[in-house]
Image (cartoon, rainbow, N blue to C red):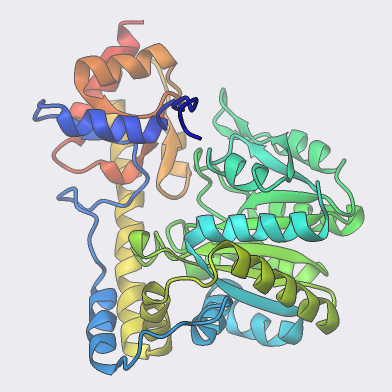
Length: 399
């Protein structure tokens, strides 16, 4: 059965990780892997998570199965986090939320559900988008097309071109939008642009599909969900996948949610039955630990407050690193304005380097990043930022 198999190329990010691990340069910097790192280069367990886990250790009395929908308590709280309690209440039985194995599991569950009820549906994704969107959605059978998004020359959003392209979508089509902290470019829609997207979706009848992987890492928990909440208020149908990997630091616990909003209770009930059947056939039920941790935190005012405080500390550190990098690059005497980095949101930005320049950074300076020159801002700290800026400048000056 397996004798004729041929190996696939290594994943670029995993290849970077492997090369970084064996690099003996004491000044090496990992800017490739998309996880938050603190000043010491660690990806810490958040304080509230540790406290919640300690409580669960004492209080949990069973490890029995949960349902394909996961934890009901988590689902209610996760929906409230994304949509806000008032809107969640207003939507009532037009909304259903399923716990999923991380954001990836939520994306794939949504794609498989859509493929089941509307085979071969078209979904438009931004150019660029997170690389894993393509296999997660496309391998379920959805037809993937792109819309213009990032202007590499001017480091902004090609909003007019984007609107023209998604304006060709109609009923039965989906448009994938990053809820905040766009990965890979960090350029987010303004509130006015979200309002224009909502109006266009109303007029054209397409269904927005929101990937909200970084809520709280841009401007704040409520601020980062502005677009999601606007669309949920304005449209009859919406799909939202949210993740607890980044904002709770629960990467390996695989904790996410799929929320589907329909036009009426009957449609929601039908969607819930289809999603449950799809989940049952994929993984039967999601893992419980991370969801129980999140539910414990969100349901307790003390833990919730401490979590929100630490998330604010994380966000402010990332934003501070953006500003510091711009300042440090400005000291290097290079004829290029990097001010756009300070204006972008979340963990990622493009440096605007060529593939050859990226390879020079890797091979000569042990600074690891992907060929697109996307960097993880959280990989920067006070001990490596000067070396990073000097290395970028050296590469640019060498042509």
